[in-house]
Length: 588
Image (cartoon, rainbow, N blue to C red; front, side, top):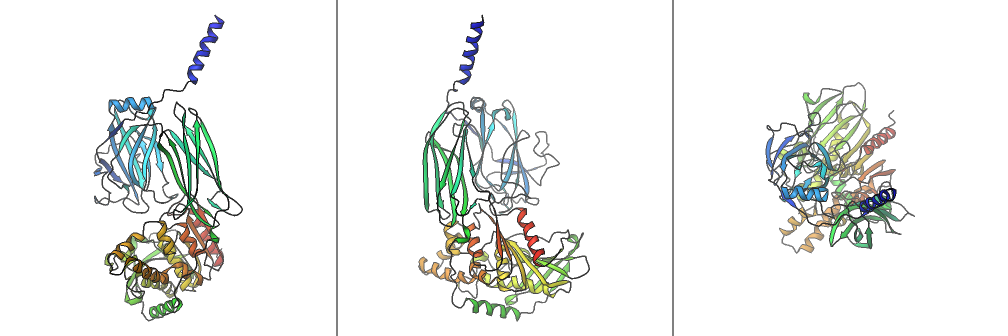
């Protein structure tokens, strides 16, 4: 009897160790494009709940952007909800695979996905930890137990769009649910062996790749690690055979010794049975302050800007302030400011005057490209604030006559959009200096993206600026910039197609014009302390163009890199910026 017991136990253990028979049959089910939509965060109302009554929500299509359907978000937030019943064949396939996959198609920009009230996947982070725009396809692996296999499934998506203002679904590929394939259950993760992803000599570029096989059967294939420059020139390609037992994982280390200073792209993928699985893409940097991007300004560069500033001085500002009561409820009186700038153009901004006695230091803030207007914050932080809308943008957009801004007036440097816009930057400093409550010796500037570029411009063209805090700066190093990302080059390509010159000649003429407005060329004139923030994964204003300008600054400077951020930076940058401002201005 005793021997029989051990024999039965042995057989049971042996059976448990045997791999489950592999199945590669995938069942997929598509659903209608109709979704319920509501703007807002919905946190306290638990809009993810299966029991929520969403009958009053708007009905929208997932095949069109919300903007195309006339829908707006609430402070960038919105929700989709939908109920879905799985077919008998899909139910069976999910049980056999022990998992399913929710396929959303391309989705903007940050979201959390709930199935039957439970969080099953997310991309990015919501404010205040917003990490930048994500516009790729979303595919979320979900354990079988999370599905209601015999009834309705409630899918709820909370999202925030901090970049394009469209939000949610951004293509017409439709959405579906499928059973999980072998490749879906190969989970790839990467550890970059440097805290901020910026490696410094004598380090090598080094990453660890972990592949977890959650299937009930062993897999074999290839692990491929492809390394290129940020403008996609090949650097190194590694391909190794892998064999991973069922429910086991393996880790592999990859190095690149002595890379050139600059930024690099990794693409990590597993190929199993001829199918790619778990692809990961990310950027790293190496010794960015040693990158070479030489000045390329024309001989009359300084004379050009001296002339522009002289012309600006001839324009009487005619400052006009109008109190905005709804924004003036706490520590600041908020005014809408209107004034004249170069060529007598009217520009506007929001001025936050502290409700305190005495002279005040001031932060002049410049806005991102096409950003919606916003007033300064309402809680006193020791500074007055002025948020400028340059010509044609922000508060001036209702009367915009400059088209798509960046390509307006490309026929000559005298007509180009940013000639006037850069003078608007200086006019903003004229305004704060005109205020009796402002200490004109304590002016600092900041901004992100286009606002980061304009912060460089302010510090370069106006010595009244005592410190600058640009982040993810735009308008830099155009020849390299246009090799890396599709926009804004695409706007220039449309312009070139409409011209009579041969394209090669027209491009050379455009690059020559842009050299007058490249912040890389202006940065050499900065004399005040500067701190710069970058998102290492930024595909809008890539780190290369950020450092092209930064490396020309000769004054005291430092940078902070946010390794997982795209076109944004973390709150640490704002804290460090305020610290720099207060230290520079001797403010306790």
